[in-house]
Image 1 (spheres, rainbow, N blue to C red):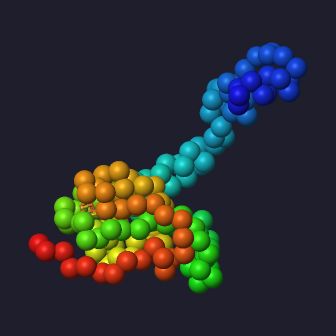
Image 2: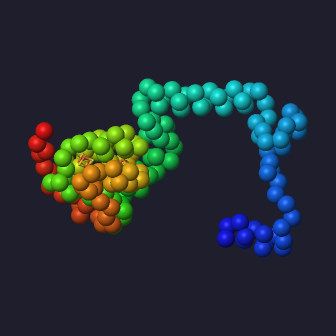
Image 3: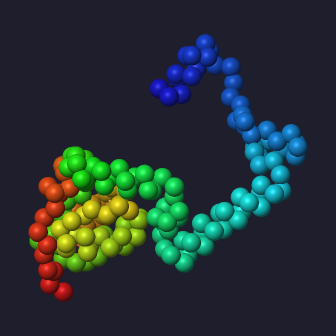
Length: 161
Ligand code: SF4
Ligand code: SF4
């Protein structure tokens, strides 16, 4: 449908310009939108910083510490918690947890998920609700729920180690 709509609106299929918006007249090369050597250097410096942060701090360190959208998401989440607005959340059935820590290994945001489970509160401003921990858990401990923060919490349990 996404492919058909533009064809319909364009009154027919005329052609596809693969390098649209990426013609580089200065270098005479198609597909390269960077215009100067200076821009290429800046591009590689930025990418190297992101890569280095990943090696030093851990997975998704750029998302957690540098992304400018993060603060807005955190503020939005805090407001929704404060006003008790129902939203998509994670809820643990922590009594079933065997502390295998598979959720920690699979969490793409590098969170201590098993610790959140044991505390009965999955609220973490860095959680992006991707659901990877839900799929990975062998005991079906973590579930999606749509409710206020308070309703998503359960009493803390001490897991026997
Ligand atoms: S994967 Fe499931 S059972 Fe294992 S520690 Fe995490 S929540 Fe507990
Ligand atoms: S939903 Fe995703 S980001 Fe959140 S704790 Fe689970 S694996 Fe980590």
